[in-house]
Length: 171
Image (cartoon, rainbow, N blue to C red; front, side, top):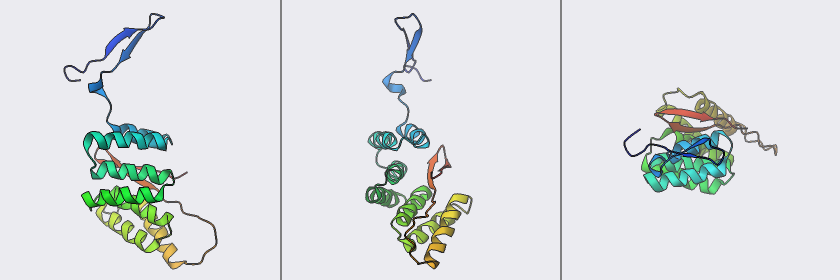
């Protein structure tokens, strides 16, 4: 902990110590958002991501996270917009490429989804099994254009934290 960022200890009415963190120690909004996403709290995660964007700026990471939360909330148009903005800032940002591919898949725009998954797969050097599975499913959907009325998409979202890719699974 840096100087000036130490927790203050207070005591509750029952005499037990309580610790409160100063404002300087607030946790990064992206970290909080990622934890909330993992817990299935997508609306709260979106709020945390907006806070991160306000603090850090609307960079590729924050915009991609906002897009992923909107995607989980079923807000496909908002998700697509945020993810496209993320890619404007960093065209090689793998999580945004993958997640935009998921958004396109949810809209059954298979050609664009395939293109995005291929780009994500190439930039990731094939390390992510989830991106490879997304690409395979998009390719299969392109070949099978028959409509059966059932949405069988099982795409996985990708997000980044601590310099590595962390994967969210679909329910």
